[in-house]
Amino acid sequence: MTSVVAHPVVDRHAYLADAPLRRGDRVRLVSPSGLGSAESLERAVGYYRDWGLDVVVGDHVLDPHPRAKYLAGPDETRRQDLVDAWLDPDADAVVCLRGGYGAMRLLDGIDWSAMRAAALRRDGRPKLLTGSSDITALHEAFRVHLDVPTLFCPMPANDVFRDSETIRADVHRGLFEPWGGREIVGPKTEVIAPGRASGRFTGGNLSLLAGALGAPESRAVPDGILFLEDIDEEAYRLDGFLLALLRSGRLAAASGIVLGSWHRCDQSDAVRALMIEYLADLGVPVLWEQGFGHDPDALSVPLNVDGVLDAAEDGIRLIVGEES
Image (cartoon, rainbow, N blue to C red):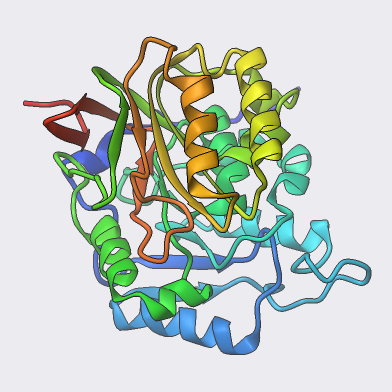
């Protein structure tokens, strides 16, 4: 007889009114992508323990890959750490230590039915995934397969987490305060196309979204407010990524678009002009330089929750959760 895995009902808006974490909660640290150092791991553990959390480190986070220096160990061990962390019945959050490259390589080997069955903490609220950059691949997969809220935020083993008090304070706020009503607009934000939109917050790193096209996760094209950012890309490559999203229908499905940082990409004017060419005439509000992504003081953005974008020349509001 075939056994049936019971899938719990997940409230993806649980953290609009209730903070994701409390002191004493367990967080599991994993490295699904690039390899860090013992020093950066020690630093990351220290941050979260200082915040009063019970920190458990994945068994293989410092394992080297036999071939690829850019991977934190073989796919099998990186995947096992991720799955073990999520399946831990005492885990409240899974924190990715850093990005780089490699998370997408793990997705096809994950038993998503088992992951969905383990999506809730012991208190009945959804477990939380955090990370950014290459972790976009996991944010998208967790949205499609698990429908849990996730937090796109800087990662504790990266230098920016060490160097920016703003980042550490904002990540702490994203973990220990409710998300509902939060305004997430950076100091350099401008309006490319005015308007008002509401819907689910999705997206992340542009190159990762384009690279996932054709995968099962990309076939569930969500409507709502699409967040995009990238790092170290020339304008012609960004052009290709945007064209891929346009042809896939991802841009057409968006009710609004929020452009984050384009750190160390081509000249800012060239990137802005490219974004205007692709996005300004879609008939939806578009923001430029909202601040999430790879900015030295990058903002944290909740994903797979609803929010409101109100883009006007005389004022910009980007709010997590429905307006009261």
